Image 1 (tube, one colour):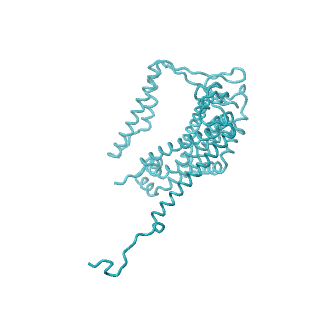
Image 2: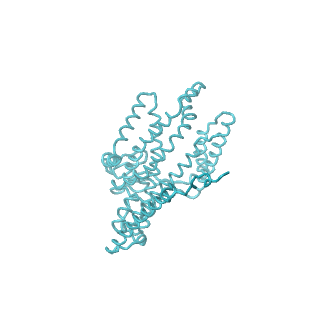
Image 3: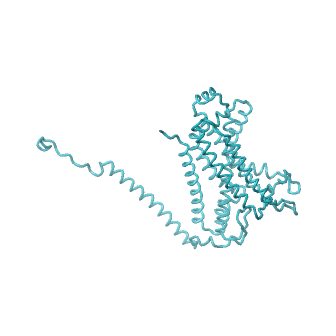
Length: 396
């Protein structure tokens, strides 16, 4: 066969660097990375220069210094003699506390209101609609201030506390009886661990049984009986190794028991109610995404509306619900930083607020605070992605 030269066709030449799209794209990417690195290098060097000019030392040695201030709520032993490092841990645990409780309450409230929004009962439907439309359209900060200033602060003084079954509610918080575990209570923990293991085994067995025979075992009531009955039986056989620390009015305030400060209650209520509205709409949209033919087929088979929702609609809707639900969890955790508006001692308030003012280590403290929120949200996102992958449809 004749070559390109003998045929009079010029040989194909390689494109120039600028005309090669792959090389041009690589050049732009390298330039972008260098620009970003140069920008951050300039910011860091400028910050270090200004700090040195003002005589401010850098580093994390301040974490070992005594804090010199008290914290209203602490899940760890703490007083003014502890270090700023302990202050960081106290603020972190307080943030995790309100975030964890908020996620649970917001999810529960959101699922209930999302299902209620689709109810054929006129009253239930309108109440759910009113809840969603009202609380979704009011800024979260205003809701936090409303619950704290307008609801909790006007409560009576400690001497005129509202008693609710051994608990006392006043403008300084909610005082609850607190259990004191005595020797021998470890048997109850062992029984609880056995009950949890039995429930996990029961759930797996019931799933396989349903796939094989189509029959279901009353796993919910059986699980509740195991989780409550077995530890209760162990508790009674061990001689009831537990007593109660009852709150009592001494002087101008209550002593003993557990105290839920009003700042925690206001923040928790506001976060749960606000985020619950978005979760309710996510749940409603997820249920509506399931084909109506599924419900009609279940009705034709004689399943009740409750069973249809529990066994057919919700499992399919979860595949639509989980991704946006993850975003709401992340938003709730980040919104918890608004706690500083009412004085709840979360990480932003006690560490990025009081600690920063006393030490002046702005860069280190802000970096640590940002790193904490980033780490928490990445972990939550990872766990939700794993759950979403497990709930996704598996093609055969």
